[in-house]
Amino acid sequence: MRFMMLMIPKGYESAAPGTAPDAKAVAAMMKYNEALQKAGVLLALDGLHPPSMGARVSFSGGKPKVTDGPFTEAKEVLGGYWMIQVKSKAEAIEWASRCPAGDNEVIEVRQVQEMSDFPADVQEAASGFAEMQSKSGQR
Amino acid sequence: MTASDIHRSIDAVWRIEQARVIAGLARMLRDVGLAEEFAQDALVTALERWPVTGIPDNPGAWLMATAKNRAIDRLRRNKLIKRKHEELGREIEADGEGATPDLDAVLDDDIGDDLLRLVFISCHPVLSAEARVALTLRLIGGLTTGEIARAFLVPEPTVSQRIVRAKRTLAEAGVPFELPRGPDRAERLSSVLDVLYLIFNEGYAATAGDDWMRPALCEEALRLGRILAELAPEEPEVHGLVALMEIQASRFAARTGAAGEPILLLDQNRARWDQLLIRRGLAALERAEALGGASGPYVLQAAITACHARARTAAETDWMRIAALYARLVQLMPSPVVELNRAVAVSMALGPAAGLELVDALTSEPSLQTYHLLPSVRGDFLAKLGRLDEARAEFERAASLTRNARERKLMLERAAAASRASPSA
Image 1: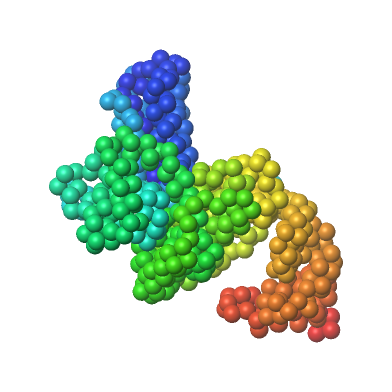
Image 2: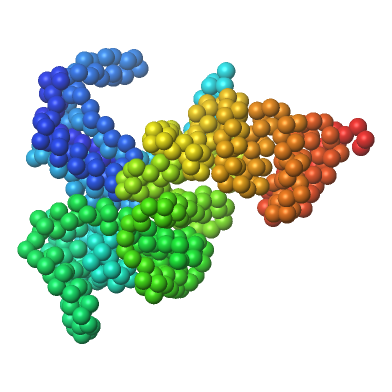
């Protein structure tokens, strides 16, 4: 099963554009990433620039509305993620627990949905969509 | 935490740490069987203590230290105090003195090599293929004998026996716990890669068996491959195997239909291919090629699989390149089955007549006499060339040779279609 470990650094919601973690924190995190890689569980990972460099698109009333960052009303925002492949939720939690995270940081552990997790009707709807995609790709 | 929560956590810690603990112990004890035994002892101790004390900050180091102490205790208690064991005991004590920071250093610096030694010894040529698979899954993968038994559809005692016998064979043969060097290394490495690919294929090719355990076997082989790629990053064939498995695994969701029927590669809905695994596979292939390994058997097979992965539609497949890659592969591993695959690629690239020429050369091949894919492929080429009576005969022959009911039905349908289209009918 696949899990996302979502890094939520408190304070990142108001971080200035270009804010980057300090070298020491990065070094510790690299060591952790290496451990994930050596254990053969790491599938992908990325860090995200602060929300002050991003935007939110909301759909209230059925129309997209763009708000540039930072999002002052947001209580927590993402700082990055790891995608790992493990045998159990407990294993994902164990890996999250080993992260050299700071006082202000939280890691949310969430299982990635697989097609086989869905009921038959949803699977069918999704596969119709997939077929449509591949047909349009053929042209 | 409830008791079952903590047990799940201990399971997770064990899955992460056990191979490293066994590997570290095996180097000290020079005996894989004993190493596993003491590692198990440490796990039992953890299961007793951690529910009370909580999980320690560095559970790996704790397990290793506990296992070492167990080893010393047992060696003393059993009065196995031959000179060798005394020396061993002293060495272990000296090693373990003082020393969480020391242990950390050991874990960080040498454990990679120990783990690689453990991989090599688990796949040692002195063992049968079945024993290599069972030992690798047990010692490196950390699967229980029950899980291995379910995955291979054999009774659990059979697996236990295999593992016990494998450990005994290694001990009796005095197989050293070492990293093979020189020309020996390539051969030993290829044995390791073959074991991993065998595990992967067991999970991938099977249509029967435990639904849950079979995909888990593929995932396990992939995980072991990824670990190996970190342990031996300079070996192109390792990356080749990882690339091959990543790309094949990317097709999981597309390879069976709603009723569980197999869907052939060219008929698969490519939108259901897992792009993350494809990207990982292509990256691993690039790494292998950058290391100058474009000519090893796994790298070549990965390169062929990659041609399919890169094609957005079946029609966009680069068959010329696939045919060329098969030509190199068949030189490297001369096999009628590989040659048959080459014939298919050649027919896709250059037309059915060119494919037929290659297949005709195989019809006298003794090892293919009962292989249903030979008449099936030949029938396909003949049908495309309009030689329908010959095509019908080949499809009927293929139907009589296959043991798969779905395949037989398909072949009989094709035979009937050829017969209907034939002017002589």
